[in-house]
Image (cartoon, rainbow, N blue to C red; front, side, top):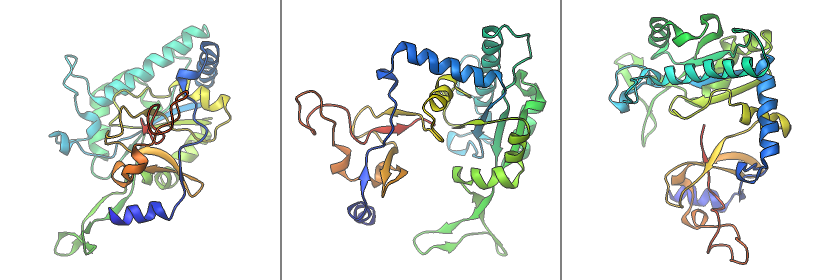
Amino acid sequence: HESSLKMFKNSKLQPPSGVLALSKVSDFDKNGYYLTGLEAIRDGKVAALVLAGGQGTRLGYNGPKGAFSLGMPSNKSLFQYFSEKILRLQVIAEKHFHLKSGAVAIPFFVMTSPLNDQSTKEFFRKNDFFGLCSANVHFFSQGVLPCLKPPEGKFMLSSPYQICCSPDGNGGLYKALKTSGSLSKMKDIGVSYLHVFSVDNCLAIPADPMYIGACIGENSECGCQCVWKKDSKEKVGIAAIKNNKPCIVEYTELPESFRELRESSGTSPVGVEGRLVYGAALEV
């Protein structure tokens, strides 16, 4: 923690820039964003991608995290929720633009890992891809990195003669997209916009037309959906600018003085009332 405090003292940390708060957007503009996103979906330019390389171990489930049931009466898995949302969005686009059934397709890319690649594919097959066309569901696996034992940083072994490896995290997406051929596939099928979300986010709306439309409308090369922290002590990472570059700051790395800063609210001075300055909690 001391090293992180020193890092902040030596770096220039600022709140995220270019924030578009839906609470301050007019209904007219919201509708415009939504229609822009829906048009892109209609034209086959939008794909959804779920980061699903993790196992459900911490949830007490022996299998891919996406196959885990949330315990709702329907007993649906996370993968089923996402798939059915995509199905519904396809129907919404078809009805809005008066197209025949099956005219709209949202490609669904699923990033797995060597730990769950085969079991994830089998789960989709066993469930008939939850109503999606199998040709529109694309699987690819992320890479792995060697495991290190703290604090010495020595390699961990899975056997006397083999280094233990683990999936290379969500950041492994970019390399995996290229090496798996998925990036080329996206280009070939005409995808211009990609909505990436985590398998943990059960409330995510894959290919969210409002979000996609807002990014298109604001000419954003990249966007990040966030919700504002409910209070300064909420243990979530936040979006910020550090050394003039966008970054994610974990709550354990943010000094107390930064956590409590608040925006000016009317005549109230900063630090007394108003929204948290560093409060853009990740929603992806």
